[in-house]
Length: 84
Image 1: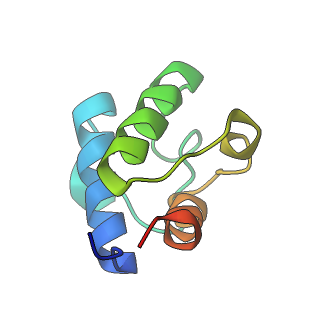
Image 2 (image 1 turned 135 degrees about the vertical axis):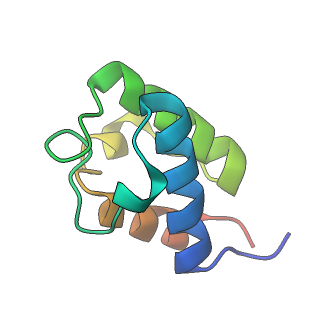
């Protein structure tokens, strides 16, 4: 499977956050903080990470999850670590 583009990852993450946290997809932007802006709690964040791992064929270790503060952080991480 070909690697996803930044836009595809952002769209996918927006859909995941919408499904898990009920946040409108148009509110999920690169500069938004998962906890402060999107109100994603730690339990929901785990669900977001698991869904993102499945959707984008990427492994996100627990130690790295704590560094994913914003949607942009997550998009960049997935972009760098996805399998081609």
